[in-house]
Image 1 (cartoon, helix red, strand yellow):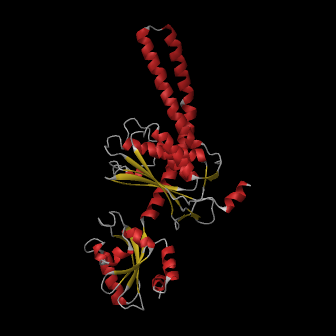
Image 2 (cartoon, one colour; image 1 turned 90 degrees about the vertical axis):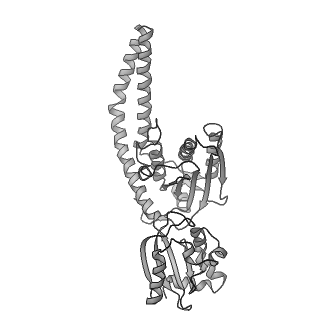
Image 3 (cartoon, one colour; image 1 turned 60 degrees about the horizontal axis):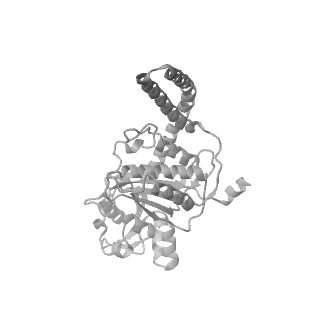
Length: 375
């Protein structure tokens, strides 16, 4: 019997077995000979968006698409009496969500003939991590571009602005309007270059243990007194979260940007709502440059809106520089957010449908080793 079968068998032994299953970060279910789900761990309840009691009332086919490869996979396991794995299987359905691309590990349960243990490993996380690394590469490209622009553009712009000021002193009223236009446009370009210079800042980040809820309270206060004063902001926080090892000001900048984007996406909505959530999600680990071991990213922070969503053709490129859906946007806001999160050793991802958009940030928690480094 493999590890998955042993874990599922342990569930029938009592509380300890249930705790073992619930501690697994991946969904695990047992499908009986009658095709009904007989057992499931906590991750499976979240995955199928149903409690164990609801799961046990239905056949597995109730939750997956008609003719799903998952059903034939179960039949193969029963026929062979041996484990079978299947990769990149889409089991998305209206009941459990439209995007459910998973690797499936199926194994027979020896002490219960006809029963099959299923372990699902979502592929979306691995693929989003790959996209995140691509976004970081794009940010590094902007780093070199920003340094070049600062040197090659800002100096000539100062000369142009100075010349316009001299012309304004001797120009008539009609020409002064043109000189003012030159100065205003010059200042606008300088501000754009200044924003890009942030990408070339490679100084070490000044970090400390930060209570993320203090950061989010500040962001909410700013939003409700400004750009989101007509939008309902809902908080769903886990008060037991450990501190995040980060720069407080940079985190405020990140979440202000995300909440502001959400607010702009809701400008035409009659029932505008932004939901900010925090949660502890163990099991996510990432290999990062300069670290010998994989880094755990258990802290999850989400900013959700119920707006029209991001166009699907832009979604894969959302964190790349100069990509924007705004008429007058520069396309640097989300690229800067991705850089800040990446500099903190975290990951940011975006899920968007016609019913709204969710930006999800995964970050490491403050640990004893961080405290030693600070000292």
